[in-house]
Length: 151
Image (cartoon, rainbow, N blue to C red; front, top):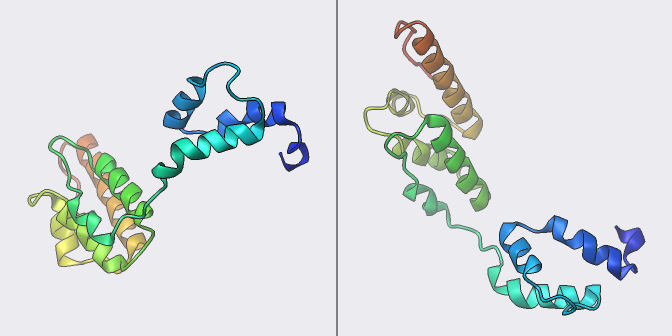
């Protein structure tokens, strides 16, 4: 696009493809004829969304995420990874521990992670994948798959 930076019409047409749903609703709601050039579009966009700047979450926010009743491990893990990535790192042992705390107390994976806490997020991810495979095996073999033993 840098080759076409001086083509206001093209830049205004391409601009919406970079927006999320909230910003796209704003863009689609602009009054016809209100924007005369790309510089004006950028100025209006900045004025509207400057207060929506991303603010990093503190690491202790991970303590607030809990598995919901009826929620799958996949869904809980996805929500957890999304929040973990927003935080942008930190002590991986603590982060892995907060994942465990968010699981139900009688969840087999929680017990395994308590007995053998993962050293980092990769090890936690491997353990989750192993647990999901065992769950699938148990469903296929009517509960006769071996117990989980993360290492």
